[in-house]
Image 1 (cartoon, rainbow, N blue to C red):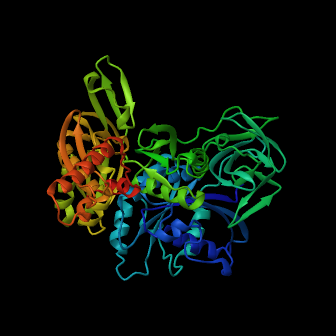
Image 2 (image 1 turned 180 degrees about the vertical axis):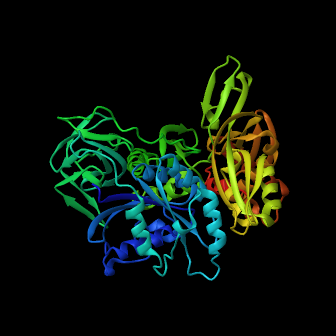
Image 3 (image 1 turned 60 degrees about the vertical axis):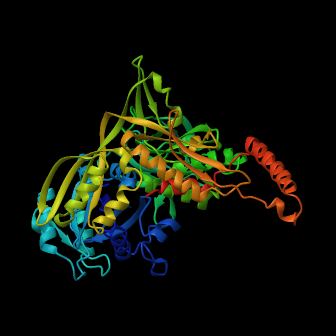
Amino acid sequence: MKNIRNFCIIAHIDHGKSTLADRLLEHTNTVQVKDLQAQVLDDMDLERERGITIKSHAIQMQYELNGEKYTLNLIDTPGHVDFSYEVSRSIAACEGALLIVDATQGIQAQTISNLYMAIEHDLEIIPVMNKMDMDSAMPDEVEDQIIELIGCKRESIIRASGKTGLGVEEILQAIVERIPAPQGDPNAPLQCLIFDSVFNPFRGIIAYFKIVNGTIRSGDLVKFVATEKEYDADEIGILKLDMVPQQQLSAGNVGYIISGIKTSKEVKVGDTITHVKRPCEQAISGFEEVKPMVFAGVYPIDNEDFEDLRSSIEKLQLNDASLTFEPESSIALGFGFRCGFLGMLHMEIIQERLDREFDMNVITTVPNVSYKVYTKKNECIEVHNPSGLPDITLIDHIEEPYIRASIITRSEYIGPIMTLCLDKRGELVKQEYISGDRMELLFDMPLGEIVFDFYDKLKSISKGYASFDYHMNGYRPSKLIKLDILLNGESVDALSSLIHIDNAMALGRRMCEKLKELIPRQQFDIAIQAAIGAKIIARETVKAVRKDVTAKCYGGDVSRKRKLLEKQKRGKKRMKQIGSVEVPQKAFLAVLKLD
């Protein structure tokens, strides 16, 4: 055990985690030259296309130092705030972390939040300054920032480059020398922590675990503590680029188990695996339950695909434990699921993965956050969906979730960023200089305001230099109202939203204008209205497509034309009574992207 090291790589987006991981794998000959490609651990098509890491990836390397062989278990983690749950799970399975800082950008918001997460778990931090080969690198300034942040010695900061391979040998030595070996007793009762799982159509569910105590052998009868189900360990092994079966694994190691589990409810991330004959006394205290930030309805385009959608989401949930879902139904869209996501990027990725991996084409409703509604009887109801709001006469007040946002930026962009945050009903808590011309702004803001386009706007007004991170900060009372969209007097529940009273008029008008462009013309007029309760605040009309019924009248008396027009008018009136309006999929999407 003394020769095992478990570590993860944490950093802000685009600071070069995956590229540096490539160099480590190359240096330890874990990956053959023929298999080598850029960001070799990002194995999902989506990750390669977007150039971001979405999933944490575990891999084992062998390294020799001073004649001794060491086993290094590396977990590469995502950098985007929407995938911070992946990072927290990876940290729970490690004893040390490489903190990577881009020498051209310096410390950014996500660097700080991931670092605090690692410090909470008592991880040994090895600071690494990446991208030293770039002309725009500022090594001395960035070193000062790192020393100020974690209080380390200047000589303990490793200068490296993921592109050229500079400093890779030093990093590997530092991992062996500075990160402690895992604590644990190979002879104690078995205790394994599940930190991830994937679904394989041929082999069932494969769970990835870290052994805290004990030894597991192939063929053992094991029990999952939370679900109390028992299985045979058909195959256990370690994770290289592919899975490598082993006869036994003992404390401190990271590996996988295949036991022919078919139903996804039976594997929970954070669960403990133990032996049936000699169980451990208590389960490992897993990581905290995930709290979804954004809720949206996900509906199959064809109602017959409801069960397929359920199984697809369950399989996705195995691989992404931060996704939560429960069934719901809508008048406009039929049966579907109310899903909880960690942010808009997370929602977009899930939608894309449903389409690619499971061939499920879905409609997503307007996303919203969860509110606490207090009735006049002093009851508190949690509302994820505007249609679940009680009658307005019964409501005493509504509370909405607030976040504490940390924005790190250059001082020249302070003005526009403050204007943006104040427009979003933010309150400035404090601002301070971190170093040189870099400032940190702390704002208290309503979560509902940052859900849609806040991050995109922040990036564009700061030319990409502002970094953003947030955590929940309780609930506060707020003047919220329900905005309904009516088509021909019928409410479309999938388009209704809960919104602050100041923004309701403007949003209602914009939604009506957008829908007018997108709803195809029918044989009758379609009235699109935005309403608050019984009060209509905006209206647009999609004009009817009219057939020229008088074309065949060439001359003759006017009463002939009049008769035909009257007949057409009666037909239109009847059509309007029985005709229904289809809202196309792109209308739902366009309403989400209202600028």
